[in-house]
Amino acid sequence: MTIKEISYLGVITAFAIVLSYFERMLPPIIPIPGVKLGLSNLALLVSIYLLGNKYGFYTMLIKCLSVAILFGGLSSFLYSISGGLFSYSFMYLFRKLKVFSVVGVSVIGGVAHNLGQIIIATIIIGNIKLLYYFPILIISGVIAGIGIGILTSYTLNYLRVINK
Amino acid sequence: MINIFDKVLIAILILLAISFNIILNNVFSSDKDYRSVTVTINKEIYDTYDLTKDNTYTISFENKFNTFSIENGYVKMTDANCRDKLCTSQRKINNNFGTIVCLPHNLIIEVGSDIESEIDSIVQ
Figure 1 (cartoon, one colour):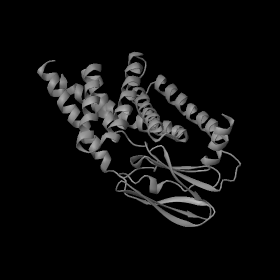
Figure 2 (cartoon, rainbow over the protein chains, first blue to last red):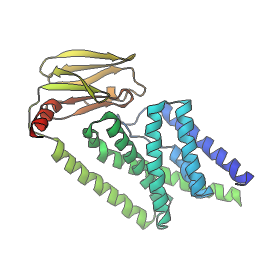
Figure 3 (spheres, rainbow over the protein chains, first blue to last red):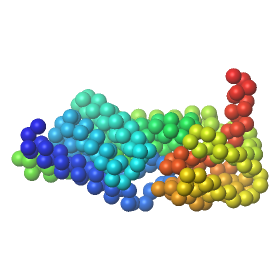
Figure 4 (cartoon, chains in turn green, brown):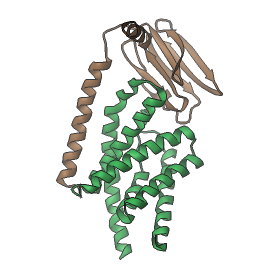
């Protein structure tokens, strides 16, 4: 771990936490639990593409822990870490396939995040009927994923120019 | 920026969502005319209410509260002190099928599950 990597990791993770906080202040778009923009996925994607898989994973982990300590509680930590782990694993696999652009990876990340959260919610609430929200959560993950993917693509272009 | 593989992935996911929606609608919807509303907190049934009687109920537990009203066979969450208040803006549910979820309070209001689960337990 070089000093450059450490500072990049710090800045990007701080960025993820701020985005997460910012999103909490926005009013909900549709009143369905789990439907959200997932702005902090922008920072996670930047971390994965710029610093690599290992640091991407650190960003996800530190972001979930910090947000839970700062703004949430245990139950919101369970939701965010399950969403984070699902989303990270799928993005890792889909990036390994080397055929998808940032947008594709972002879309699968958004959908997997919602999938992970609905599974945890079904276990915590203990009612299988929660799966009823599954289709709408896939659609919302796809839409949010496309938006975040395009944003990430622009962000990465700028950051690569700076890096040169 | 978006390549052909991304587009295929997006199309597959949307198809998946649509087919899940059709399957779930077939599994969950029913022609039964339910008469009761069940409130479950932390996986335990809290109470059952009559869907045919118009009334407003407030459930208080551990400094938390959720208020819901029953009107003309429809249930609507009207107030709660949870973090996101998503439950209060969820659509009202009726005698056929529906759930209102309050994730921060681990609370779920559903129509008709009591009758089904009784039948299930007899079958088992």
